[in-house]
Image 1 (tube, rainbow, N blue to C red):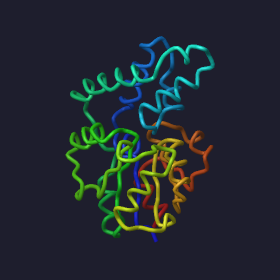
Image 2 (cartoon, helix red, strand yellow):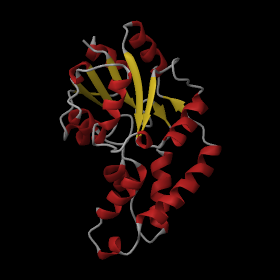
Image 3 (cartoon, rainbow, N blue to C red):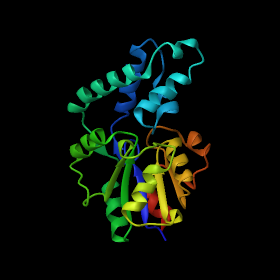
Length: 224
């Protein structure tokens, strides 16, 4: 019995055209690197953003990674993202709210989780006019837990909020490899990769999700 579905935000339910990772790429490269957007997505997608910077830098086989501290890059990224978000237009992927509505009709709780901190996540949700208790039931961000993805802390926190004791009754949905790893680490009953965001179908296949879908409406067909 499915009691809770934990959805990633950007790239899964919200289409913000990878602006966060484009901003991350810009900030990292400002400090002397030359990472492509594909490399940034491969090594950083879905993670708490300071950790993402560390992992992206560490992926480059050179001594350069030992010469630049990650904190100045993270601070630059945070300031640049704040400016970028002020004028950013975001939208949901097609029929996201309809999918949420149908899940709620079945009594399934909806949690959003993200590698963003709470302030950044709320900026996105406010642009959509999404409210807790309306479109979704809970928001869990990287700043709400001790360990971010791929650790299972955010999923466990969502389970605690709704008094769910069995992870087999939880579904994790996300657009990145690390989303699937997070779901598996939580021992979720089902993990679902969606191809609308950071990683391709082939990349998602590498971590063996239960299903891979191309759009959220397919979720209902797979689960019910």
